[in-house]
Image (cartoon, rainbow, N blue to C red):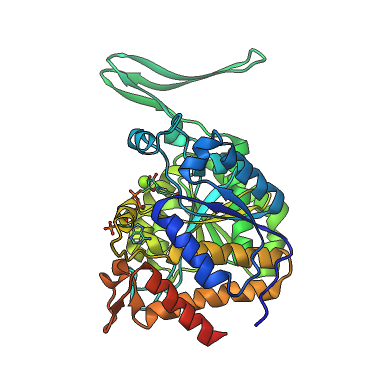
Length: 402
Ligand code: NAP
Ligand code: MG
């Protein structure tokens, strides 16, 4: 069989520990035999970030801006223990935070559904994707304890000298007060990223806030989403046969429980913090989640939602067998390859990526899986495989499909 060619390189971002081990296995067993891989390689392994004073992370982000699509392995965010373990020159920021800041992106996470690993909510038939706004609100708050009787005010002093002042509360006794903010520019970028993602995946978009109570603050979120929708996306959504739906956050929560899934749920910062944990645990496992960072100008970076699986790596180093689930990392590769194929009108590449996803799911549904899934599945006659054995089982399924 002739290998599938790639016109434009993919930005390949290597990482750390067990996921770095899986990374190589996935390339060797599941991609290189079928695709003439064309990548621009960036080694974000912690040692190389240290060697380059983290310049490699910045270069990788700029490469995604230039080429449009990247795939990233999980990486260590160094803490004090890691600085010692890797003998680092200094503490480096989270690579994901650096990438997110340069690409100005939003992270979208969606569960990978397989028969035998059932969501707790029985009517969820299709994945629910969640997006979380990553700026402002209570995460950048200013707060105070009020010691006793007195007045708390909200004051804005414009650079032109105008002053606007409102009383928050005339306190008769002790209490608490906080100030929060957001920026039109940040909300606009977030809204755009959500509309772009919904279109790319042909999913209805829901956005919710508490604008009945917070008429100005949450009302601003609602109005910005609405304006961007009407100006730039209404026609495209109609063409794609999808819809944009705004509702109150409590109504959205009630509807999510009753819906069958297949939607993108865009959340304000706090709502996203809370509901993303609810969704991922209700759907089963972190190793069965896809995660993609989308920039407002339409660049895509695919990754796994979990970390470098440190404990398994230490076992691996000792020569013990591991049973680490590679599904999220495989789907990071397939997401990136499919997107590259779509942008380059390379149908063969997109089709291959979809086949590899199907082969992965079929392998699990046939009872062959890693230990984390074997523990929670309701399938019978399950065969628990080691890290490489699982990947090789997927290759067998894939070969039979080719
Ligand atoms: P982790 O890698 O997410 O793993 C935590 C535990 O979850 C594992 O010990 C394992 O449980 C289970 N697990 C996670 N992924 C799994 C998989 N693919 N297959 C099977 N089990 C899996 O978190 P961590 O070990 O606490 O963090 C390690 C490093 O990852 C940290 O240095 C952190 O900075 C980094 N991190 C990176 C990212 C990223 O790059 N996106 C995200 C989060 C964390 P059992 O031990 O019970 O098997
Ligand atoms: Mg949280």
